[in-house]
Length: 147
Length: 162
Image (tube, rainbow over all chains, first blue to last red):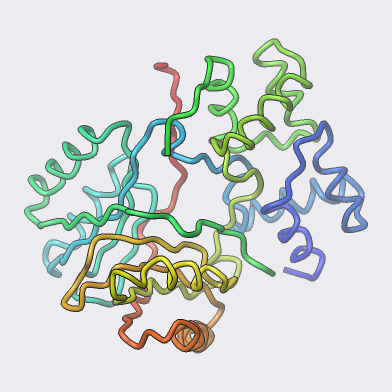
């Protein structure tokens, strides 16, 4: 990544224009042509740095529920546990962490009932207990990184 | 937070935006064409859904590990119940904090505040956490470093079955 890539990432993460020519507008802000911006975006996608360009949707506002789940997964059950959890469509993030509770993942479901059913199923299929830690209050969600 | 009122066109627009926008120079015109409405209508509806906080952000979703921000730590803070609001708000001021939530008490110390801290080095991460601890006067915290990213995707809220 060069300096122009970094400038572009800073702009395109959080200030993507909702106007007819978004890439042209970004280019004007950082002194690049529309064509250059599009070419760099395509390259950054290819390199795996940009995952996608689109919207981050507020799950609660569209009637979904989200939660954080944690489990103490023993070594011998680890691979099966991860496979089973990751196969779940509503599991969007999953991390192995250095802690007694070594697997932490998020689950988004269309209803409270569906969420509970999914958790019960995961416990049944994996034989591992899962602790649920839903947010009581959100203080901040702002995932834009400064490059 | 209550459920926003959305009609079928709104949902179709969200269906397009929940994935990856086409690499066309005019992505909104492309959505408009598919829905046989005008580009202005698409733009107007997206802006409205931003105001309604249905859309939190439009832009590039970055794989932070690939982009060099390799260390993420989940930091859990044991805070007395009557300080949760104050401490939670103070912790959000750190730009390295991407998420901050109050959750049910967790672990032996009953940690209630959960923050995600991102940095390009482990030392950088530890340094920010020390500053955070000092700023809020909370010494009871634990950092759970991520060892491995096992999954990272975006949710598909609206499918063809709707």
